[in-house]
Length: 300
Length: 276
Image 1 (cartoon, rainbow over the protein chains, first blue to last red):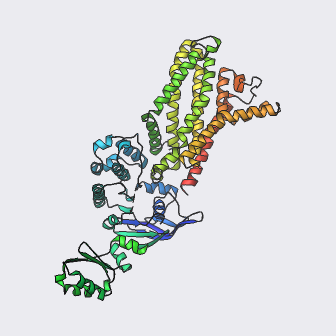
Image 2: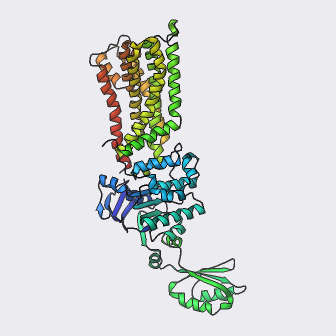
Image 3: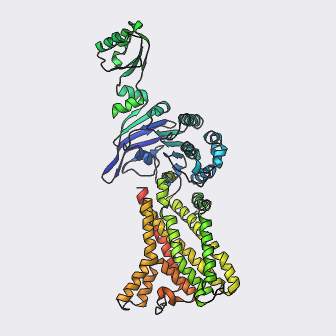
């Protein structure tokens, strides 16, 4: 499912929640949405789900502008996992899934291939009121998959999950994606997670998308420096520090025997060849691209 | 097709939630116990203790039901939208292939059933004992009382839906439903009596009757007293007589108005408020 936002503006009275956002999410793509609270992420997601309508502009699905009936039809192909949803305490896990399956026109049998990985049979028989935060997120994911969605919208999907849960959740998503070729749109505050999972990312600020693209495109587009980490040998630090300062690299931090500094892309080859001339001062070094977090804070 | 799978799913969920929370059972028991006590001891002031006087029992049950059923219905539906919003399931429904009509109607039908079950079972089980003792001639009257009571509950449930859609915060929504309960069960009639006394009878019976019809509690009360043929006990005003237009059929239409109009407004307010 291909989604197009055409100069979409959303106003609530005088407040502009989203301003002239233009965005295209390709069929089968995994798109990440990052931004602080109030940046317009939720508004964009609600527009994507058809819960609210644009004040100006349009949201197209596979190039089609939807009317009210069209939205109900398209929602049969959308799975939505809200952040921290709290289901009905008196219903069991299975009853909860059966309820949402009826609402969505799906079936619990649609997810029998992954349900066992999301929740055990024992958990499905228990009332949701007794679930831990992690289990609530799992059943939240399960309900989002009930209608075999072509588009999966995940709002902070790992909220409340422990590290094992996070890994399992992304494992399930990877598996689903490889089998079902869904388009996935996910938002997260944990940028390191998105970094590994998305093909492209949109960085939002004050109702605008400040940047979109693959992580590589973003790194290059913002010309952020690389990150150089050198594991120093004893007493070797002074020579390396002086060498780097001579190249104009003043922001140097040394912690636990490692030197960390930003390495301008245009100086990469020269600096590396210089430090290799002083091999006896260090035991190892690495050069890496900036993280999404660094890109994010570079923009904000 | 009106009764879609999604609508049915909403209704079944609401009913099963109330059944599992024991709400239905507790209210059923309360109704049954009250009915038994009132039926057996209802005529104690006249020195009689037995299951014999159906009219007195219906009159006493009506006096109980006008307080009890509205507050149950109002609290049942008053926070229904706020609850869904707080648990974030509201967005989940709005992002699902369910229309606003299916969502609201499904919830309404489920809650109406949750309210109707205790009314039917709670009143009818002891009611059958009463009919057995008082004779089958009183069956119709008692069944009419039960039907009227269901309508009373559904009218207030409909009003509570409107409150729930209008007031987003649960605490405010519940507070307002309690105010409505006071208004309809006590303040409205007190005000009417006050106006009657102040105006020294200037208010014609026709206008007075029309004003009574604006209050669903009074509509219920009048319907029950028409059933047992004791309209004069309404508000304790023996001098008030029923005008010709105020018959059972007109009152049922008024019942329907009180059910349909708040729901109708709720539908449009909901669409404006949550899907803007």
